[in-house]
Length: 90
Image (cartoon, rainbow, N blue to C red; front, side, top):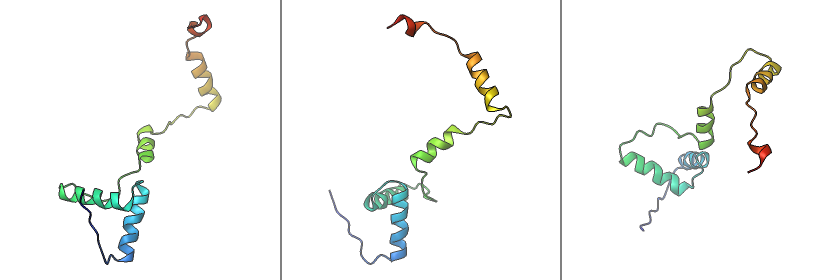
């Protein structure tokens, strides 16, 4: 596998790459390769990709309900179906 060495990088630029790599849980080397591959493949690299945890949180959304917590809990308990599977054993 080939190696690539880059010299005389501006400290501010290096810091930005490092921060981006940290935010995406990559090493600096992995981040530079990711950015180069993205650029060479024609993808737009306009900003940092969201960390996996943020993607998961965005998928989850939020629950909007005007009821009191007690009302919500009562509804959940009332709508549950009792199962005898566990009481009879496996």
